[in-house]
Image (cartoon, rainbow, N blue to C red; front, side, top):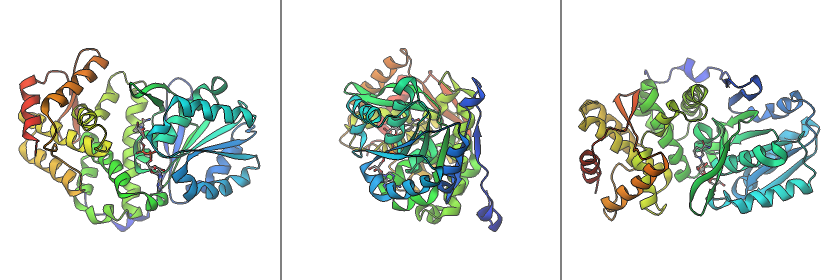
Length: 376
Ligand SMILES: NC(=O)c1ccc[n+]([C@@H]2O[C@H](COP(=O)([O-])OP(=O)(O)OC[C@H]3O[C@@H](n4cnc5c(N)ncnc54)[C@H](O)[C@@H]3O)[C@@H](O)[C@H]2O)c1
């Protein structure tokens, strides 16, 4: 892809429509840009008889953006309440679900009310889950504030919470009425959370968009500085890729599996680190592993494999397994993931950048070799 042209930078963003086949009411728009929150109240007025809005957010996001969102909601002319949960993965729990549900009851939230998830993936997954079960479901919208939420968790309607036994073990598929992605909110995001999102963007490039992959190779400085024109292209293209895949396979029957590129080994490394590595770091190592596996099995040429590892490194994400990890422990976590998906270990590999496929035919010896080869 050529470097960003003036035209690219000024192009107006068209909302992305996610068309789901069950019924028209399951389809919704993802509105991306700066200042998109100005359209929040217009969207609410266009819904049929919304009687109140309840913003669900976390402590970190509330202190930065809670008041601003309240103000944006004023023109909708309905009462607005705000429920704050503590920031962090620990809030994706049954305890928080019950706590928030009781507050909703106290606020007299009815099936005509609208929940607004304001935050990253934690708030989105939790608020979406509550919306899907509170009084047998109420509508909700997502305002995605982290890069992970903007390119991944806010699109696709997967909601859920964690149990002590594992992550995302209780959940539903429940689509929001709309998703708002204000790119200017990325300015306040920590580097760690920004990199978590970048890992997912790199993944979309590898599995589905060679042009975007090239843009990532060429525009490092602009991306790292979070310049809005380039972020707009990356977020828009990532959402489009995820939306198209979700449309074809809403409930993860098959195609949606390609979104797990880098996740088979990535999840195991994340678990083996006892979640010391972030999800983005673990997926980055997992993507390097999947590229190397694709090369080892003669699907991918060496140059493409090197380009993939190069891009991951270029964004300060790891491509090697820390020395204190043992291969056995990683294989053990992969085996327990395998049980969860029906006794087969699936890998997403690639034939070239942009052309993924799913296979359960990777020999154990190759898996071990690749893991050993990635150790520092
Ligand atoms: N539903 C899905 O399809 C899906 C996909 C990917 C991830 N997830 C889930 O998403 C969760 C991770 O989400 P996440 O990475 O967004 O983390 P997160 O929601 O925990 O947010 C990370 C931190 O960033 C802060 N924050 C949020 N927006 C900010 C902003 N604009 N400026 C400054 N700080 C901000 C939050 O307060 C929090 O402390 C996991 O639970 C994961 O399971 C779900």
